[in-house]
Amino acid sequence: MSEHRVRFTLNGAPVERTVPAERLLLDLLRDDLGKTGTKDGCSVGVCGLCTVQVDGAPMSACLLLATQVDGTALTTVEGLAQAGHPSPLQDAFIGEGGFQCGICTSGQLMAAAALLRDQPNATSAEVSDWMMGNLCRCTGYYGIARAIAAAQKQ
Amino acid sequence: MKLEHTVSLAAPRARVWAVLMDLPVAAACVPGTTGIAAHGDVVTGTLEVRVGPVKLSLAGTVTIETRDDAAGTARLRADAADQRIGGAVRAFVDVAVTGDAPTQLRVSSDVAILGRIGELGQPLIARQADKVLAGFAECLRATVTAS
Amino acid sequence: MRPFDYVEPDSLDEALAILAGDPDDTVVMAGGTSLVILMKQDLVRPARVLGLRRLTDLRAIDTAGGLRLGALATHGAIGRDAAVRSFAPALAATFAAIATVRIREQATVGGNLIHADPAQDPPVTFLALDATAVVRSSARERRIPLDELFVDVFETSLEPDELLVRIELPELPAGARAIYKKFLPNTRDDYATVSVAAVIATDAGGACTHARIALGGVGPVPLRARDAEQALLGRRVDDAAIKDAAALAAAATDPIPDLRGSAAYKRAMAGVWTGRALREVA
Image (cartoon, chains in turn cyan, blue, green):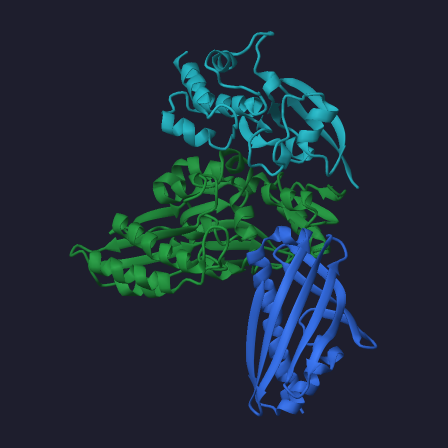
């Protein structure tokens, strides 16, 4: 019923949109802004497929209203690559078999990127604890853990 | 889910039975019920109940399915649907009276939750159903012992 | 999701005025992690949602009188805060135990308390630390001891026109040790099957001078096991005392059977985990 002007940066670039109050961030990203890297999994914030970073903090885009990111710096998986090249973290996922079907990978990368930025020396137990909210059905998590460890060594 | 309530009433069995079988009066004893109307053997009404942050508005009917005045037993059937959420409740309520001043009233309910309402989770629904039935039993006690 | 009107006031006074104007059809949103799910399921259909995110004053954490946590502080911020860690490491650990990192960054301590799921983490430790909830309406401020805040599953004693603004904790007694234990047999991001928070202080002779035992997941509301606490006072907190206290704590529970366990199972686990908590702070 009410409409709102939301202004934020998306992967560093300014964005302005008018949205109805009930618009979810996930739908704004995928349908309105064409950023389909963020996936819709469980819709209730449990699986981690929709992980984005709001002012650097990992959050579930399926649980955020678009209005909740007004005035923030939003990062999606599309923002990881640097000048068209995969980031070191993305290279590590490629090199260590950190994905198979790829559906959870965007979320894994978003969560891992936040961890490596804030706790670069996280132990493997701390990595597991941080990453446990990002579910994967294909890899058994071994490739993901190896990829993060490899990225830490860089 | 099955719920049991028993109350002991300081009133004659005949009085307890008369109130219980007077559906509009008995329905008025269900806490949160409004708009009670009798259409022949069927009573309609709306039960407003809150389950946490969710407000339910269950509109439905109550009828007496079977009745044995001599034995003091009856089975009531209640069917109600939520106007807004999309879900329904169906309950079979077996009532039995024994003794006579004091009279024991046993209310055994078998409640089925259908549709969306079930998303609230059985434990929470059972809790609220339990409260409603306990309130019903207490109100009956007050009704039969007044006057 | 169904359309609704969304309002995002800039000040607490403005928020309270909006609530006062229409308390019954206005739903308050803090982080939104619980509310958005309920709205997506169409179980809650507010005409108006009052978003609190601009009330940045309510995110403050300070140490006046012990520890004060603004209602809009996120679980993540509280778990990382140096003042919280030095006040009671067990309190910081309690917040770190919640759900996933994503929930901890979005959800708030105030939203958590008002959501009032009896298996949540923060209320249990708060109860053991004698916390008080400070709530405001346009007309007045109320202080509610935490054990009077929780009324039933998903139900608090907050009035429709009130907002929780702060949680206040007094300094712990000198030498007191605190612990939070979460029995988590399912997945790491789950609510507790049962949880126990214990705060114990002893004198030079080893006799217990202060005891708080709080339990979560064992009834319609988180609770203090007061009989168990009384049984410890004046006594050495040895194996015999712990065994007695654990039995009393279990007896104080009234668990709701669900997917996490039967009532009997949860009651038994309450005893086991009370014993484990007490052994760590004896």
